[in-house]
Length: 196
Image (cartoon, rainbow, N blue to C red; front, side):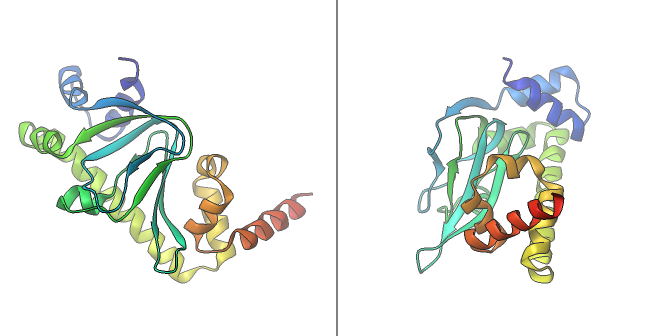
């Protein structure tokens, strides 16, 4: 199936597997088309899957007590997404995950992932690498949020994730960076003015 081409490349960048191992690994994933604005996770329900984005874009967010949305994560092509706390601990989700555009994902359910990990040490290694990368990313994000100004956070995000900036709506990016949409708009205009 052609949907697995980019996925196989993604896996091989992180772990050398034989063709047989690669096919065995991929066979545990199911390709699913998701429409723009469709939710793949919602609070109160168990997150049954981990998702690899083949095409498209997703946003994970929570809603605060006063009704404000806080973006936790984005995922575009070649990224993973889930409500990891719910998925890993098999407890009700706290996040909404919504498609920002028509998308194609590969999903694996919790039981299939556990079976994969038990079947080969190399498969368990792959998921450990994913977990380590996620932990490092979240630590960087917390440190950046605590030590940088809003403008610095925006500049760092632009530098590290230019492809995400092109795909996500301004309100979602502002929410992720911890600022208002109006303030982000000012930063964007200021940046454009500097370039002219």
